[in-house]
Length: 213
Image (cartoon, rainbow, N blue to C red; front, side, top):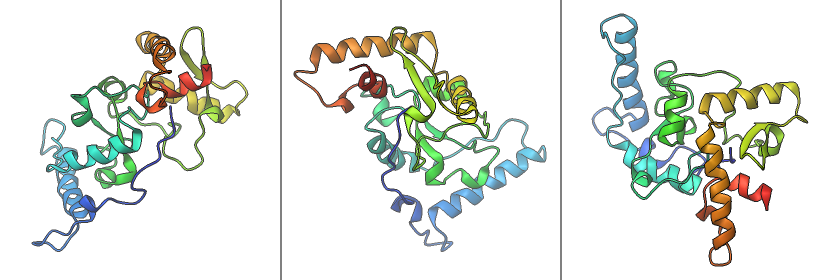
């Protein structure tokens, strides 16, 4: 899981923009609307989980998130296809149904692939590692098995960090067989084309490649 350097660091303009009718920021206004739906659901006034609406904000947010991750999933580091580069899911690290106040909070939003998003769902545990934390370093939590492509908790890390690493691996499915094969295949791809294209951001699974080469 590669460190994500969030750009911009603070709330982007599209969320700070003022709504002329209410005088509230877009973030405040849409958060209030979502919280009302969640309350209705909790009271049983809505039978199924309430539908979430980005109000077209997702288009602007995807561009910013994609730039931050260099068009990669913030968790497995796969590279988004040309189609997914404008349609990838946006992960709410703190689930929007459980933490409605954070539904439009910039620091809670991450670019994520469909596979990782499906694995995580609305699950949350305090042990999960947030890849944009200022002090996050891959080696503090994880290592790779270079032969199998598997990601594992760093045996040299503290017990707490190992538990957090294992919880993150399990929650996002970072040890799935197909993903491990993809890492190995991407390394082969890099080794074949690095003389023509050595920009690491051009490739998927950058942490794996960097630690093998």
